[in-house]
Image (cartoon, rainbow over all chains, first blue to last red; front, side, top):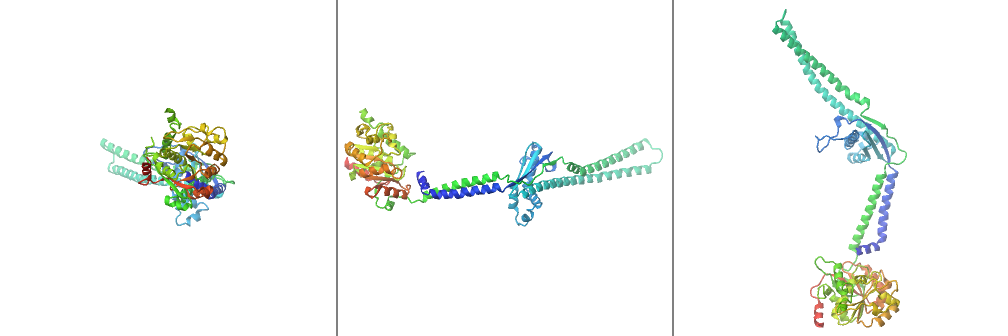
Length: 344
Length: 208
């Protein structure tokens, strides 16, 4: 330890300069980050997450997640923000769009943008969406764009689901209509082949055919109603605005805000890096410093000559402190050099 | 543990050289703290007791860190500083030795006096003349130059302890420069890799 302290004392001015440069740069970077970061935030009231995009536990898909509406919506939005296609759509709606699209590989830029978004649940039905940027307009535009693209995605997902359901119902409707036509044909043929009074057997047959026709018509009517409901329900829900209401619109902040954490991170990293570099310099300086490697090296000390050497004492598990304690025990006999003389 | 154990005999090489050169007073110091000066002074004193059939006095003159006095649990006892201040006489401050142990003069009350050339000369020539050999434990030169130089002018030999592959050469040069050429300080290299075949055993055999 002492050689390291000696090296640090010897090169203290180098260490001070290194620490001053690194810590100073960290402080300046932190201040600039704090003073040039603007954050825009939107507060959203959420009713429920759309079932088509609902979150599920990726490890246990069959295990239902007990989540509030806010946490569901926050998770959903966070997942969307992890996808590059979503971010591309968001950026495309802002002034950053052309510059990002001009890049051949926009992955890094989109990842950096994603890190500036922050989505968190504020309560059971309230979430906040914020974006930190060096320009207040960009921060606001990004939040607005994210909410807009999210709405488009949800609507698109709802439409896709509706289309799928409508297609399924349409196939069943075609089948049901075919059955109804067939039942009607069967009744027409029966009426054509039977004139006058019907026997009891024919009456039963006619009643069976009529029942089949009625059931087919009811099925056709039911399917037509379902198709109408499937087409209208998402539109009605979207128009009512119950699912996702922006309570506080994002605004352009006039004063820097939201850069505290990055600024502290920068300053902290610079502080630790400075200490680490100083420690490394001291260690390297100690290792590389000119010291006596052996008796032959003593000629470098000028007129001073070697008087004697004291070998390193090796005893299993022993240290220099053990040696000193043993010597003291011999010399001082429990603290009293004259103990032996007194005894004798 | 006795003097026949290998640990005290690690200092036999150094003690035998002191014995062979005929030095009566030897002071150990270093450039930096932690070089093992007090341990070497203690071990050398023990070995000299075994080598010489005369009285050996171990003096703790480390005003900065009097570890020998702490080892002897004599921190509150009168000692060297009190003798220099005239508060007590050396005879009562020195803890007598025996045939296997050196006599010991603890540091005493360090605030009572500082070592000056005149007071030390008086002490060595008048009060400590009965001891044929005096081993002095001094503080590091770079940390306590004023406590070292007066001793360096009076003792027969100043030995600067440095640790092999550890003590920075610039600090050693600086310490030797402070001691000055007139002191003719020599080096004791501590914690070296043991060499096979020591002349110490042969020397002890001849003397016994």
